[in-house]
Figure 1 (cartoon, rainbow, N blue to C red):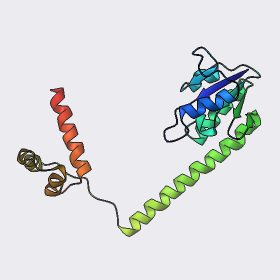
Figure 2 (tube, helix red, strand yellow):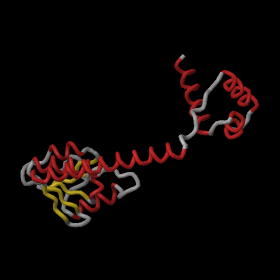
Figure 3 (cartoon, rainbow, N blue to C red):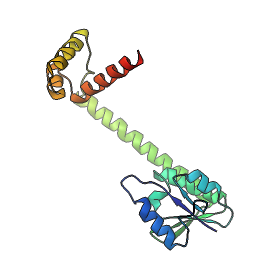
Figure 4 (tube, one colour):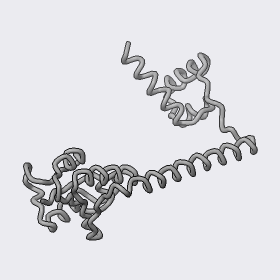
Length: 183
């Protein structure tokens, strides 16, 4: 049996386009009790039985990252089901023998990221560039902030006068506001 899965993909394929694709594959996307799941991948996978096919409009619909999608494909495979990617027409089946090579490839990726981060830290230490020291909010700076606010100074002017970034200023004001609300 075909079951569908639609995921809201920010900046990606729209839900409307996914529904259209699944409709062309013969799935009833408008039936609230039908075999199409929206933004509930766990339920979609749990509904699969041996021989079923989970239909998706494109690979990005199955997961947020490669490892996330692989985990979903593995779970689908454990249910003896497959994934049909409508964008390529490819049916993806999981085989238990694939797990060891994928684990190895993920370990390689992790090791490469760790090595790259170590290299970047070493280069930063050699250059002496350790970034800016954190901005210190002293009582004097807080008093100056209140004075600038009373004068109606813009956030940009306040940040410049205090010697901090506008983002740092906004964060402090947000924290101060939330603390007032907690009192």
